[in-house]
Length: 495
Image 1: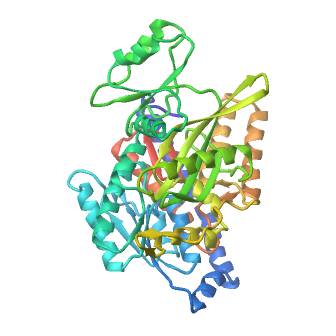
Image 2: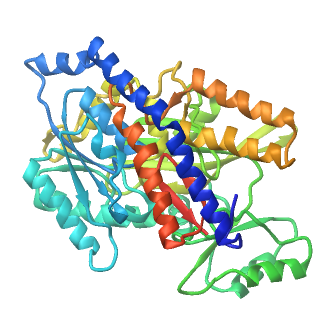
Image 3: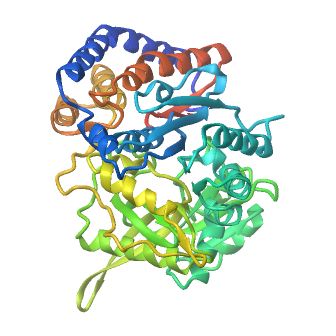
């Protein structure tokens, strides 16, 4: 993986190689595109949508889904479409590179929104969404925001619900702001009586050393508050082996009042993430899965497993104890710590972060469109005396036989092209290359691509042959260096 210290020639070669790779697979993928169209014509796909539309008791709603350029937004838009509703899509299109979601068959109409930068303030963005809601007579807005617009979506939610009859699957500004930052989330979880790891908000290097000097046994990690791609993947443990190493590393970090950091106790254990739909303080849909710093492979934990139940219990407690009957998407990151006791191995769940927005893990609900949409529709239930009392329904979880999800563009590079380069440069053995290649074959045969649908193949084709080549070409023109990309969220991590 290249870094900011890597030469511009290497970054240029990286971008050029990926563009060439896209061109190499263009004929094959175009064949798959047209074969999918032919298969759709020959099949009876859409029966569920037509059946719902023919039902005299069915009332199609107009749903606005933002974030359809990301896989989570596209997945939810497709679910509402399959359930018979009218779906309007909206998303940012930075640098005027058209996103893949705008070409989805699931969308009745797509609206590009202005990025929240410079003259385009959060108020302008909220007005944009309100105009769409009023023009299209939207009944429900399902926000699938990215990390950069989470708080702005909270502002838009308050404006839309105050000035229209549209309901929003989005937390308000206060809740979003609190959960968006690691240290304020930990404080809120503690206030609600839930277990949390030791966490400190630090605004100077001295504050970091003061915490580290209190104990010799604990280890900590430092994370920048807000978006900082250059330090996002830094998992250095503190204190370092020597005091000199500790001081040298901390001195290299831009810690200040203007750029605060979070010093959090390091927990040794496996990482997991969750996604939940919460309506009026009640969890309506839930999934948990193993996680990584940048997760590109999704496998749902069995909903009846002890770990999944424990994470659901935490989510349920957080949602029900929060003030005001919250409605929105709620995602947590957990570390599972195992310790030996007299009674055996004790498993301790440590929440380390909250994402008050939809998680890409929602792709694991594919095949459960009807149940998921019914869960969302509970936000539109009528109120009696100001109290919404929908009939109790079981929490929606992924099907027991749901396939794991991957992204073929990511795996092709990570499991075949890059290992092949490492093999030729003698960085890995042939056995390691073979294992990597067999993993790719397993994913191709038995897993499901998170973007591809045979009845809606154009977003998949556009993602790999227009959107990403366009982004890499832009990086060449702007001499932008990057270390990683997330195919599912279309995020480029600069360095």
